[in-house]
Amino acid sequence: MSGYVEGVLIVLAINIVYAYGAFLPIAAGQLNLGVAGFAAIGGYVAAFLSNKVALSPLAAIPLGGFAAGLIGLAVAIPVLRTRGIYLALATFALGEIVRASILNLEVVGGAAGYPVTAFIGLPTIGLFAVGIIALVWLLFAMRFGIAITAVHDDERVADLMGLNVRAFQIAAFTLGAMIAGVGGGLYAHAFNYIEAQYFSISLSISIVLYVLLGGTQSVLGPLLGATVFTLLPEILRSGAQWRYVLFAVILIVVMVLRPQGLVTGGQFRRFFGGRSNAERAEQAA
Amino acid sequence: MLGSIYAMVGVALTLSIGILKFLNFSIPGLFMIGGMVTWFLIRSGVGWPIAALGALALAAAAALVVERFTWRWMRAAQEFVPLVSSMAFLILFENLAVGYWGSDLKSVPPVFGSSDLRIDNLVISVPQLFGLGCSIVLIWSLSLLLTRTAIGRALRTIAEDSDTALLLGVDVTRIVPLVFIISGLFAAFAGVLFAINYRQVHPFMGDALGLKGISAMVVGGMGNVWGAIAGGLIIGLAESFSISYIGADFVDITVYGLLLLILIVKPTGLFGDAAIGARA
Image (tube, rainbow over all chains, first blue to last red; front, top):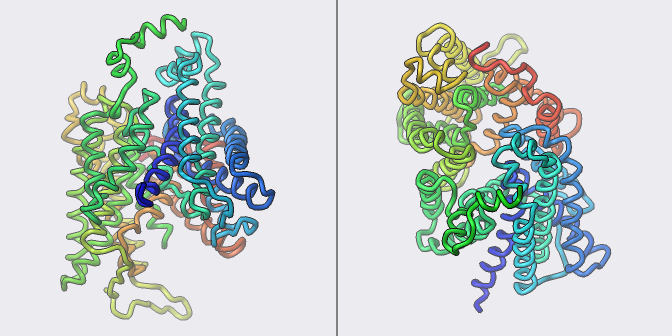
């Protein structure tokens, strides 16, 4: 495998992990524009642990994710009082605060960035990505997934059906923060260097676009969206600087023609002859 | 001065939110078009007033294209869709500008000759004064348009409920493009002001400013035109104060901390939930 292909695959695997971090809250009806902030927390904590405490990256990265999840949980409680566009903006402000704070944190290099000594290669990163996909898949095969979908579709009805809406929202947000944190840890150890500017609002927006392009109703959506979004600019590279223009046009066209994203759950179930959403819901109730 | 540019961008965003309930992410792109096209036309040898008009016209045309691909498809789709499309338009505008003009910083020649007015020890910069005057006039006329005219009444009806407006005989699909044009013009005019005041433009100039404009809008209360102006000034002041008293490195923490605090404590903003309809 050439170095170029390996590099692209590493970026792809990390982007897939990020995408699932944004997918969980979106599946519960919350647009999280602060994903990059949680990725930053996970990345910096993991980098610090493997640099200063000499932990193996295999332990440091999950711990980084755990730290991001903890902070996610702490902020989810006040932030999730807001909803809709207010929630999106609150998470955006949160992400920017994290980024600006790290910029001023001299322990981890501040604006100069933070070098990371330990290194992990494509196989490890790939395994992490597969693990995250499996985890989310599992979650959505259980009652959790149905509950999250119910909360997304109609909070009031979900509440009437006896679901603890707020608990599920907080859980989805926290788990999403955790997964984004793992993504940040992977990034730090794959490139051996992180800087606060990388974790900007543009990163959050791209991650959210992966999910929205791929589809928010199916567990496969983020996988497809992240893959298309990562590989398309590489394939279009022949078009040099105009590739982002073409990319934006494709995005606009997809949103007009297929606003629900490229894949939906119903499509897959119909394709594989499984049960419909209605039947699943009936069974759950 | 930066405060009044934030305010203009905030007004552009708040019009879109207040009337259409749509956070139009392409507005920073229209701001950039305002600035970059002004620079481009002045460099091509056109006088600055004509350059400014050209920039405004192009931004209005771009705003119409955005309308065609976002709001028109909104009702049938999920609420995220127009948001995503307008983000795609931002990427599109910025990269078109990079494609045509390159991504480096461009400097705009001074348009007001010797540009300082001196009254004793007080130094007033003419472009700043001009900008401030124009923004006050523009925002005043917008407010008159919304409160005194038939179009304004139609827009306020749409703000309350676009379906009811349709039932009452307001031609919603014909009048909505107007909202896009007005908010596009506000954003682009802020861009023109930025270009002639700070005399530097580049394709991504809209990003940071758009984010501050969003903060201005939220701080003042979404959908409230005068709130956006107050919000713009508050954000501008918060920046200046945190530079003087805490240090330049902490500006973003102060501004976004303020934004987060307001969203959690009083999400409707400092000036309440006055939608366009109630107090424009």
